[in-house]
Picture: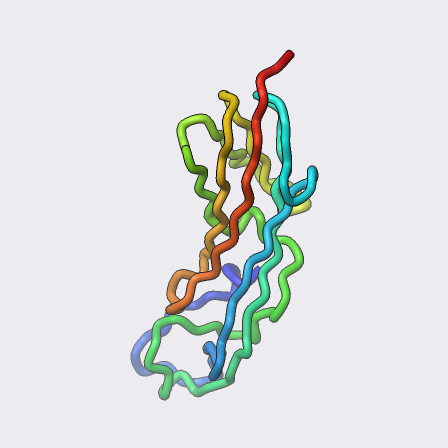
Length: 145
């Protein structure tokens, strides 16, 4: 995971660093175990999945890095599953409950306590870059019969 590779720069350090290169772009693609437009009943679990791409990355010397956002090793350009490493926001928010357990497959789970239409927004945790990646899905929650 990229988050595990993040190192805050300190003044006077030298050596290699990896920073966002020219034309840097980050994307997040969100889906669920029920597809891109899920419908589920109140209380049913919905497994969330997210894929992140980022790059290009450029190698620089720590003495020349002007930002505190750098990595000590080349970050992966594709992370196939980062749902547990991004920020999820529900709108409206009161009825959504996200799991906080560690899942071996790096997915997230959400359950809704009330019927309605919800928009789930996924925001990258790489917040030190100018363009934070965002994606969203709309979820329909229907009453239990």
